[in-house]
Image 1 (cartoon, rainbow, N blue to C red):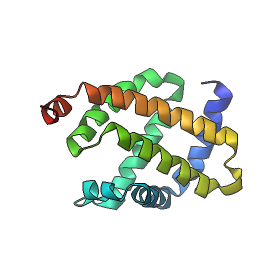
Image 2 (cartoon, rainbow, N blue to C red):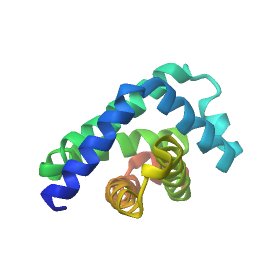
Image 3 (spheres, rainbow, N blue to C red):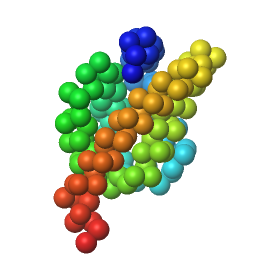
Length: 145
């Protein structure tokens, strides 16, 4: 990713982070609209805390764009945890859709095709790392046996 692209992602995320609780709430609302069955994964979850975790994870990724390799181990660990929660590959597409839609709603007309491309690319990179790690997860291997 080029420096100018990283700066655009950082700047746009700074705006989202300023209203992190509302942004996280909107994200989970969109997620459950796109796949209501995912609600069951969060049945015993404090959604405010879950929203905080989402924003911390996004902050970690956005803050590591210049040295993405440093965040890979954390993403791999997160992926393995998510396998234990029942997350499957197809859920990553739903999460990506909810994230892009959340950003689109948040930024409205300012969410240009360039922002969409950059955020989609960043998300797909993260999702790719996580899906690859999930495939090697002992929890996944136990579920498929």
